[in-house]
Length: 157
Image (cartoon, rainbow, N blue to C red; front, side, top):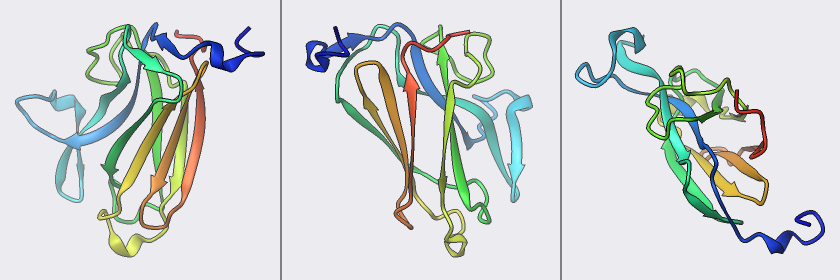
């Protein structure tokens, strides 16, 4: 029915938690030492899980969220990758937690102007469709974009 009349579903209750992983500044009082990675002398925590939407949240078809101001980890990077996951735990902290699936998709946006080092801003725009999440990464310096579609019905292993 949805395929013939897409407007029939205007919202959905999320059956699982969706998110992506990123690096954050390392805080020894918050992060385990095995997650610490040094980049250009700065300590970061790897595998931090950022929630896009939690299990039992209601999302409207066409609803958009923007996760703003991410940046390349290294000044010489010419692309930035976002990997997406599902989790059975809405409070998952790391993409390596037992409750978090293998990656269900990724988007890579080109960020070619390395003269700005890590001062390039990348936004991640999320749009909820009827049966999918549209994730678009936008390099604000160059205007480059890249999009991936994540299926709500994907295998949650």
